[in-house]
Image (cartoon, rainbow, N blue to C red; front, side):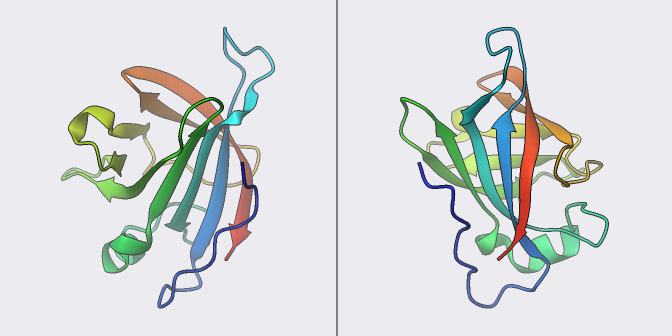
Length: 133
């Protein structure tokens, strides 16, 4: 599992960041799990919120890699539904999409937490790193 920052895609603005999310403490993982999570490339504004304008202009560069020990990585894109709901879109179809709970209101800064619905179950992830590309 690689922990290095992804290369900056050509033509994306300086607002793009590599954000690392790792599974936070939960019933089956009382210490969390650094081998379950996401690496995402997203544009963030100065306060750490997702920037919808930059996302719209550079949608193809907004990528996600879901990693889970013992499973193949899933690669997808950050998408936004009408009404503002953010989700991860993978190539398999709608069944594998994962919805970010209130992603539009969350600040993507180290130490904060975000929730993502994976296979219909909500899990909480801690933001471990926010890194310039």
